[in-house]
Length: 100
Image (cartoon, rainbow, N blue to C red; front, side, top):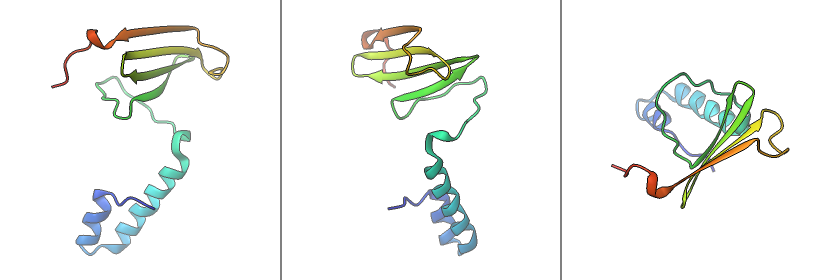
């Protein structure tokens, strides 16, 4: 079952069915590609919304993962994520800033 995005709904409401169908196709393609899509990040502030992410940094693969106990950061050699971590850091939830 496909989820309709706000842009798609707006296009349908405006009567632009061609645009709405194109947005639906783009959304379907993005879902099919999933994690295979490389997204470039610039220096900035980001909020991790799904609890975990992989970030590639100068030959390292970095796994950021929120747990009920705190934040876990594991570092691997890029391309060798199944070969064991090079280093790891855990910071307990008691050290986090309160959610505002």
